[in-house]
Length: 193
Image (cartoon, rainbow, N blue to C red; front, side, top):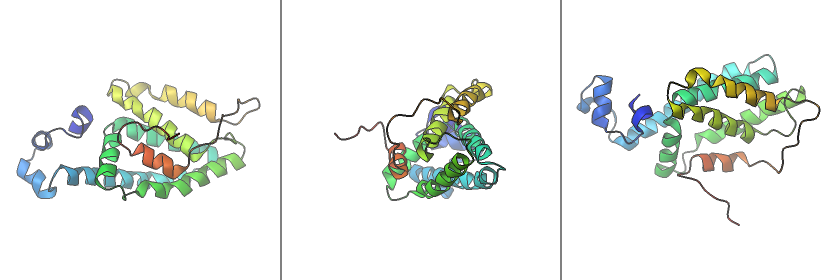
């Protein structure tokens, strides 16, 4: 996709040409670039909803964790423009926050895996979400690295497993709503202190 190659500010005329349609067709469907960006964002949220039954319906809590990281990080690695789309929508409409609806679901998935003793007791839903972002960021290297990203997935999953002698994770985790807002913010933010 053009946005994956050239970013979300790539010319819409180039997008139309890549799609094999006239520029007028693009503009008839999307009043402007912001409307297209919003549509991409909403389509991304819909993709997450489609993955949820497979992830949450896994036979064990640990398998849910594996699927969550594998499916979401893989999806993000193949769609490296998504973080820019998230940031742009946050600029356009800071009140549009459908991602926070997943907080309770991910918390439940974490609790299930921890209750069965397979996931470290000190891991949070935000920890998993950050790991998805980290693994998904491997898409920035383009398609050449996509066949190899599961190596890092294996390392991450091994670090999440509950086992005697795990090093404790320092400090308290971030609240999911704060993580959501931060991950949708433009550029890095630093805590006020």
